[in-house]
Image (cartoon, rainbow, N blue to C red; front, side, top):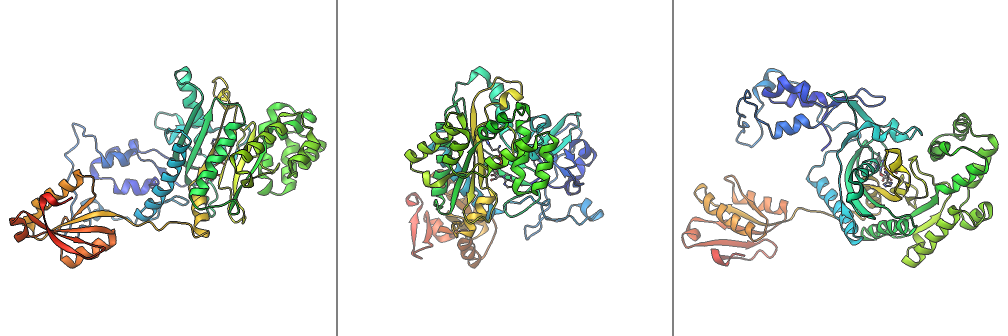
Length: 501
Ligand code: HAM
């Protein structure tokens, strides 16, 4: 669930927390906007209150007969209309969305398992310094950052890679390399929202730490191909554009441009499709990059074949050698039809140092599906020793749009094994006992918790897609039996309790 906005949190806070509310909230402003976002600390307190000696015992939630919450006395005294939509660019996950998300994440997890990666995670809230890079990465401008109550600059993570690097440094020699880690986590970027781009998204990351050879990148790309295939996508739906940052490095060296300008140049060039060429040129001149070097750069970026690249750079350099090896490995893995060389792929994050790749939709309707590359020097920017590393991030939003377009989204319905329905209040105890017995056997049970009509129970069974209805009636119960109805065949019969499985 996305964080609610500050006003709405304060309004729904129970009266006993109102005096503390200001000190509990993590609230802050985001770039170019005055939206106040309040974070979950007060929420978790609301749901899971820590009792202070002075705090009164929690009140029962007042429930009406329909089960709806009745307004609390404070809401009646001070009614405020709260915007029920989540903050712009963020999502709620009602059950139908949650089912889809769980299905997608299960696929992410299953592919990660097939490639023998271990799952990790990091805090959503990190130190701001982790994401501030001098090269002018767009991600830095899009930070949701603020000062916490202790005066520390913190930020909601816009990506997972810096946190992973932090953890690798922290673990130091206690872990043996190589590490193969995957994570699925929510990221926050103050972006212009478009189809598949939001201000909050989940990313599946797979990273290999401690391997300098190209087989690592080949393995990562193959893991994404494996996912695409599981989802029903083929090489005619999607592909990967692949290049290497070393291509640009070679051009910059040719024009004697200092190495410390490299990240900045990459970040600017990555914007080529988003902003006019004159602006790109102006930004490069400001670095400063000579007009001659800019011309050389643009010439290289338009290359779409490895042989042309080899003609221009020669076969000796690392860039051509790495790429040739990757394409040869792809052939042996059997996925060469999924990948193509494209020198214009640079990627917007300044920390990449070698091969970079982007998954794209061949119809060209959507932004990048996923992206990654080699980042051999990120750890030293955080004060650690450099360890070769590569990985990718794969968002949850673009892929869903793509699957929708191709009619590949699965129909996901809820699935319950049993509904247990006591025919009268006196039978609630026996019904609860039967439900427990079945749950102990690993079956899911929806115990009908209120007095309802049989007609309602049948409708409800259909809604939740239950397989079996177990009616606990007075006369059957007296004989130690229950009535069991198979909801797909409509057959029904009485069963002894011990026969119920
Ligand atoms: P990235 O290209 O910034 O790379 O993001 C990776 C993927 O996350 C994108 O291709 C897209 O699927 C998804 N994504 C990014 N921003 C948004 C957004 N605003 N809305 C929806 N989806 C989005 C990284 O973040 C790198 N840290 C990936 C990486 C991991 N490189 C090495 N290891």
